[in-house]
Length: 421
Image (cartoon, rainbow, N blue to C red):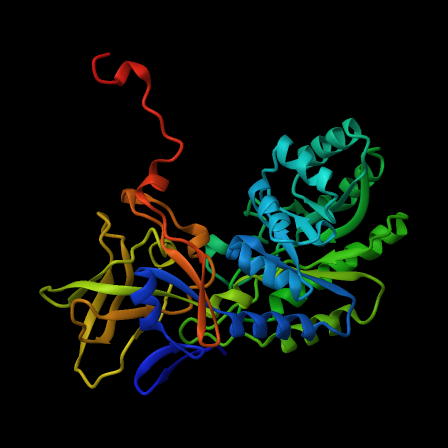
């Protein structure tokens, strides 16, 4: 469920017409619904209420400080994969003891910063990473709390680019090597073993891969117990999907019930790392039509948003519904919605039956709350859009639109290229 709907033929977010945001802030612009964000986080978190758990929002999916602050106020933590995300989470007010640090390429400065912040746990992705964190922790006189991220070799049945739990993926430690790595970890003076982690992929629409992975992890937990290695946390990652088109992902309560049945009690505390399922359908990309162009077999609608604002269709050939800002009885045409970027891959929708649009009209690219701004770029020297949070009848600019001065900040022309040099 989300809070984008038509009132008298006009598209609203909660109790606010989207056109009012476009008039005030301009386009393109990302628009998020406070009510939807709150509802989705609460529904997910409460689904696990009967199990000791911590819900750590996946910062990579949508990293605006206001969203992170909202989830922290709702009792959530943060799943991070970089030093920049650590900085964001702390600046947003996420308590350090609710921060879990994943990612295959942690650097020395990033590891040191996380140890200084006293985060909850590092999810370890390789043997060399174990050694480096041990070395840095001992240099700092600390004990680094760690979990090994295990690759359970479970097929998540999702797009290959967002599959992370197969042997061929770069993530995690092979499950058959996990026991020996845990033995070695227990012997390293700078490390404290506190958990076991996995993440098998993103946009999953079936609970079976999750329960399969949990079953394999629990067998490993039993073997570790026999080796006198006792864990506190079981990090199941994220990955629960949303409806973009005709997918039918399980509700969080169904997902939680399936996990509960596999766990069958036990003393482990869960860490969940939802991202897309919280924010995906809580945001849209509002854009304005610049031109329409008749092709030989389809119509092109050229808008002011582009692949640098929403790369998912170009990268994954993903589907995002297109809603006109005003409903009409116009005839439909086979349409490509494209942006101004000089790439044939710059499209937001292809071969859609959409109503005719006129220059200046607004349309909304739906399900644009996850992996949109966080994956955006300045390609073609385009300015990144503003972000807006709607609450009831009011809206708040939570990130201002970039300016041309923002675009070149940090660049310098060397003296030998100056006039007269």
